[in-house]
Length: 212
Image 1 (cartoon, rainbow, N blue to C red):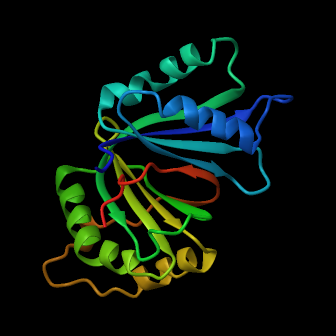
Image 2 (cartoon, one colour):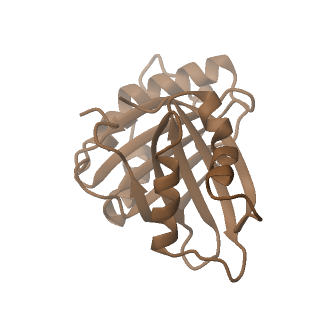
């Protein structure tokens, strides 16, 4: 079973609150009791205080209600974090990599801010599925690839989870070396607006959530 929706939240811990591995395990225990839960990745942005939580869900409603359900299950009270970004995406591609049995240690989040036109999105989907995703999936350190689509903002994120930084470093030169085919229009294939590198502090992926 693969996730159908993802909620991507960035946040900063409130000073004095618990940001430990034990706190993440406690949150995972709560999330596992929510309807439609399909896993979570806890990301940390290097030396900064920025954190990201990527949760995966089987329905859009479950994704939207997850924070409310978590606060109710934990007894309410003030949030231990300050939310900076909170968006729900459709998961359009969810692919296991060559190292899918390994725990991810690092992740790149590649961002296409958009808004992408229908033609640009179709061209990008075709280029990614036909050329980029198969190559990246085959890299020895790739654990999982998730392509996320925001239908309201018409923007896209690609989450590349890997078990070593060298795998992530190998992607940009490989993509830049690709030569467009005759039927691929460069005007419809914009480069990403940015790529953010994260450490994976923890991952909670129930068995069977990623297809082989």
